[in-house]
Length: 294
Length: 280
Image (cartoon, rainbow over all chains, first blue to last red; front, side, top):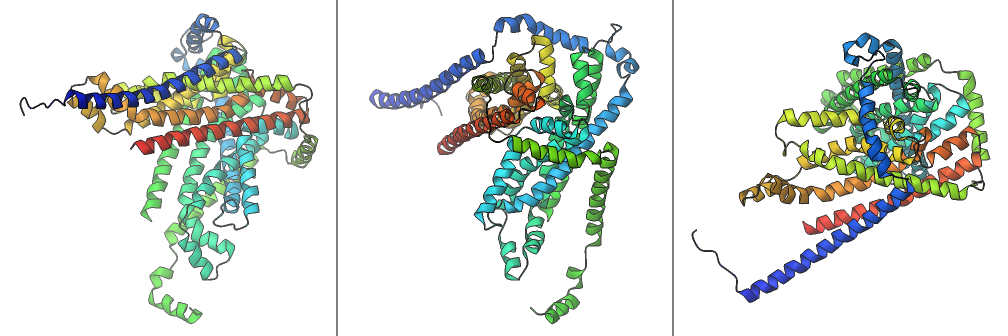
C-alpha cells in the first residue's frame, strides 16, 4: 500500500486524544499514589530500622572484602591452592551435614504423617462437622505461623541440646505448612469416587483409602519432597539455637572470624542444597508424569 | 451385587482382580526403606529417651505458665521491636526485589538467548538461595554491626536469590508476540523490553513481591535471634530466662501482625489479579 494513510478529521481526533489523555492520566495517578505510599512507608521503615546510608556506603566495601577474606587461608594463600588445609575438618563437617539432612528427613516425614492425618479432618467435603474442620484448620495455622526457630528455642529448654528439639521443631512447622497444601488439594478432588464408595457401603477409612488417596497421593508426595528441600535449608540454621546439625559450628566460625572454615562449611551447604534441589526436582517430575499417566 | 456375582466377575475377568505385583513390590519396597531410614536415624541420633517424658512434662508446664499473656511492663519496647520487624521485612524485600529485577530479566531465556551468558546468573541465584537468611544475617552483622540494618541486608540478599530466579521464570513465561510487535514497528531491543515485556510481567512480579513481603514478615520475626534487630531478640531472651507470660505475649503479637499483613496482602493481590483479569 502506498500513500494511503488516512488522517482522521481534527475534531474527531481531538475527542480520541482527549479520551486517551484521560485514560493515561487515571493510570498515571494510580501509579503515582502507589509510588508515594511506598516511598512514605520506605522512609518510615528506614527511620524505624535505623538505616544510615552513610554507614552503608562506608561499610559496603567491608562486605566485599569479607568475601575476599572468606577465600583466604590463615597463611594468606587462596583457599583453592590448598584444599586439604581449607577442608581440614572435612570429616566432622560431613558428619554434621549428614546429621542436618537426617534431621530434615525425620522432621519432614513426621510432619507429613501428621499433616496427612489432619488434612482429611480439615476438608469440608470429607468432614461434615464444621467445628472439627475449624479446629483442624486453626491448629495447622498455628503450627505454620510460629517460626520453627521459636519452637526450637523452647524445645531446647525442655529437652536439652541436640538434634531432637530440631527434629520436633521441623516436624511441627512441616505439619502446619504441608497440612495447608494437603487440605487445599483434598478440597478440590473429584467427589464422584467418594460418592460411589459411600453408596456401595464403604466405611470412612475405606472411602479415604480407595476414593481419596489415589487422587491426591502424587501431589502429596510432590509437596512433601519440596518441603524436604526447604527443611534441609532450614535445618542448617537450627544449630544456631543449639538444636543440632551444622549450624552450631557455622555460627561459631562466623562469630570467631575463622574465615576459611566459614567458606568451607558454606561450600558444603551449598553443594548439598543444590544436589537435593536437583534430585527432588527429578523425582517430582517423575511423580507428576506418573500421576498424569494414570 | 451379591458375592456370587462378584465370583462370576472374578472368573470372567481375572486380569482386573489380580494384584499388580510389580507396583505393590515397588510401593512396599519404598515404604520399607523410608521406615528403616526413619528408625535408623533415631538410633543414629542417640535420642535421650529418658529425657522425653520429663521434657514433655516441662513443655506442659511452660504452656500452663503462658496464660495469661502479659507484656510485663515492656509493652512499648515490644511494639517498637515489632515495628522494627515490619520495617525490616518491607525494606529488605523491596531492596532485594529492586536488585533482582534487572538480573532476573537478564537471566531469562527470551531476553538473553545465549546459555553461556544466562546460566551463570541462574547458578548464582541458586547459590545465594542455598544459604539461609539467618546465615546471611550473621555475615552482615560482621560487616555493618549488630542491629536492624544487618537484618534488612540479610533479607535483601536472600530475596535477591529467590526473586531473581522467580522473575526469570516469570519473564520466560511471557507472551512472545508483544515484543515482536514492538520490533515489527521498529522498536529497538530496549524498547522491546520496556513496552513489550515489562507491561506483561510487572503485575505478576508485583504480586510475587507482595507475597514475599508477607512471608518475610515471618522470617524477620526470628532474625533478631542472632542479633539482627526486630522482635526475635526479645523473644529468644524471654525464652532463655523462662518468662513464659512475656513469651506468649510476643508470640501473640507475631501471630496478630502476620495475620494482618496476610489479610492486607491477599486483598491487594486479589485486587491486582482482578484488575488484570478485567483488562484482558
